[in-house]
Image (tube, rainbow, N blue to C red; front, side, top):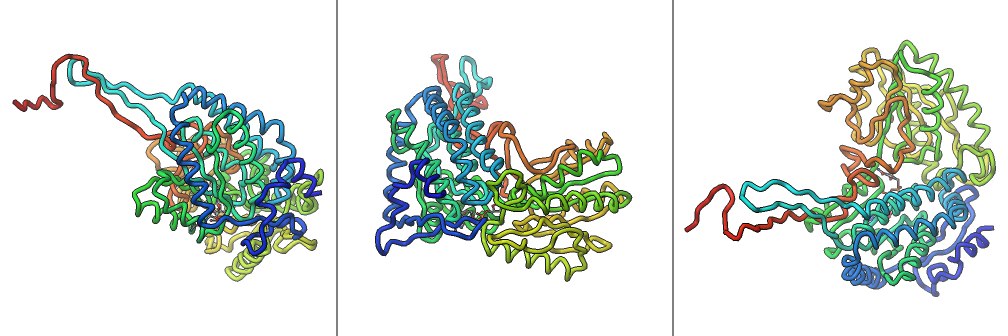
Length: 504
Ligand code: NAD
């Protein structure tokens, strides 16, 4: 089945899938079965050099293509992804275990961001400012930045690349992508589509791909002075390392790192909205989204009722764990055996810290890397240190509060600051959550009566604190992929200095 899929995507003959004798390689596994899918050759330093040099060379001409024409190329890429959406979605499911709807959803995100980038290609607006000098004009313009290094995490093996690559392409940049070694096939398939469209339209080299070990290829990319921007998505541990190395060379970093996202449920919440949003946020993608709901902060007056309703909903979900490609499945596997161990370790810690397991708590009894979606209620006083950590698995910690201030303090009291949500119909509370002085949620994403996960591409995506501060996707995130130039044009025919300085 998997070979047929690789064939349909045209990557079965890719040289990377046919390593030469003695060449370092990784075996990609289907996390739903533990069975191998393919062996993928790893790039070494020399291969990295070839790819990076190609991206540098392509930038020299791509930057001069007018932005709306660059947009036409991105439009064609979006169309190519429309054609291959079902197969690519299936490949995402096969390689990282997302259920079919989410696998295809990820390809839809590529299509959406391509559309967004096409529109942007007719804008990329600069500004004009008034000059203090007569017959002078101050113009701020945005210029292509250079080849961009994109490092992606396993859990969004396609969309994260596209968020970066489609914007970078219309901005006039070229892209060198280093995917996770847990999802190289999706990267090969997606990059092949984009690179083919670009080559067919006379622009080879815009989309480069390197697949290799962090020490051999990742570190090399991060330290590469030819890449003015490194956009890295993954764990906080990785971001701290990448941030340091890029800062050392005074390069630019766009960091999209871990989250520990919470939902606050107040006494005025509509539980008909809150419960399904919490279940989707905590259980969707088997808890392996950066925006997964990991903490529920519920008013003490509702806590028992909310826990009972959630436990009831989880009972239904436990019966829908299984093959991610089968109809009706809601929960696929974790990515690998190590992730299952981390899940078990977190549950053991939670129990040792006095947490009560209200649902799930065990690995699921089937082949592959499946676990049961789990709810853990914290002991009185919310003393549950494990809840401050991001365990990449479907574990929801329930914490309780008395005053709204307490709820906010719990919500903000973790190292990460990615996504947050409040369920309430009390205007004073919802506005306090979004307060204009910044005293509400400290996250990059703050939703009212909508859950923590499932962002659209229209807004800027990213988070604060140890989430890294980067913004990708919509709004003005494109500015990260361009360099700003302030220019003064003097059409007075006289030389006049600013601040009235006379230098005669
Ligand atoms: P990871 O940190 O293990 O790996 C992410 C990527 O970084 C991989 O491509 C990896 O090879 C690369 N990498 C690691 N060390 C490197 C180094 N020294 N130099 C260069 N590259 C290096 O993360 P993961 O397990 O793949 O993904 C899960 C994590 O990603 C979670 O913490 C999740 O919250 C986070 N994530 C964040 C976002 C976001 O937008 N904020 C999105 C998806 C995932």
